[in-house]
Length: 174
Image 1: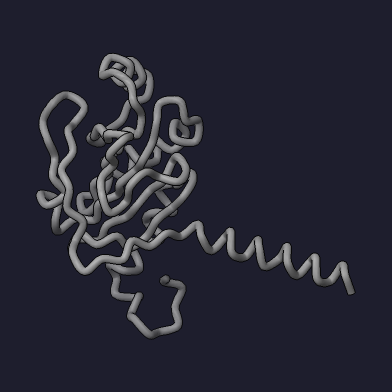
Image 2 (image 1 turned 90 degrees about the horizontal axis):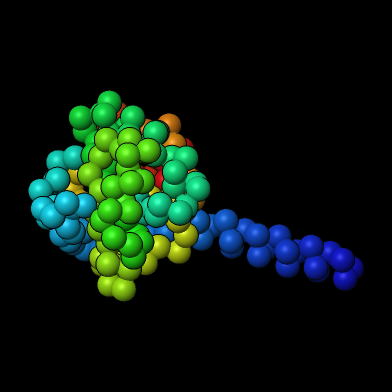
């Protein structure tokens, strides 16, 4: 009997932990912030309306972040309806980023995040990498905590493009 209670508690804990991996950022307004690109110019999310936006929080010291760069670069290069933005969540100098990017060829814009004042509504990521997908209207619709692949992102976006995801229907769309 006691073992059953303990196992039930452990199972409940695990279920709650896994369900927290999908973080929602409910808002009545599209996400709108502007960040500085790696070499000076600014980029506003408002400029990207009409495309799916993949926001990827990463850091140079993060091994899983390094591993997902080729997939995110391929996604950014092969899909005209999707743009990937690398949100560099690290307090370091531009030269360190440049050295890193010489080794890891990134095809998407790198934006600098102030780790002491990260953009709202997201704030500081709980883990690195964290990837947030914004729909073409600018609303956050999916969060991946941990490494993500091109296939993970496409399997989320593509059913929505084809009209297979209809609210209220029983289909594998969240």
